[in-house]
Image (cartoon, rainbow, N blue to C red):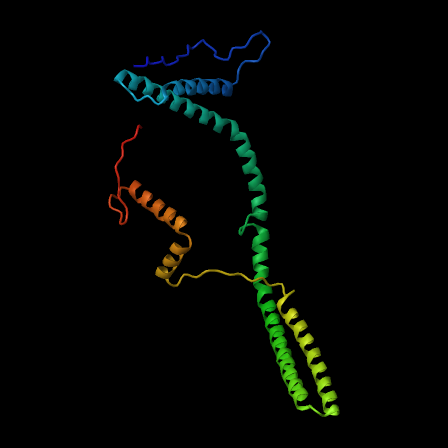
Length: 250
């Protein structure tokens, strides 16, 4: 059996990062905890070499090493929180200063814009509807003129004067079609309105069937996360799932 490596212990008066020379600055708290974790990590590599635990002694040594890593990690995280605290306070102060002005949906800019949009939208919508009606009217006139011109050309066969008149009608119809195009552009652009699409659920069963076919992986991830959450809450029977009990090192 592989001999169990000894768990490193550090005396109270021993500095693992002691440097040569009397003028060198002392190691920082981060340097100390980093060295401790690096040493424990290297020791864990010695143990985690693929060989299973063969004895209680070996188990206890690995357990102590794991506890040492856990405690060192907690101290490192506490140091991280402490070091970034001044930055967090600065960020919060900046956010608190600007939020009353530009916070999404709640700042003065968004609130004022929303109130003004409530005034602008009905007016712009009415203008858009009027322009759309005018565009539809011009388009109908252009279509009627084109149909009449086409019939006139067909009827003018063998009659030169009638053909000339029909060609004039066709030219007029094309002018109306260009006017209709301009009217349609005016009715659909530069209105100060934007189109917003939203999905409104009306048939849950149909939606579930469609999404399962469209995004099966995402659907499975969703139901797996819901099942895992239920099991964590103590549910032991989840339709469509086997609830499996496992033992893991704590």
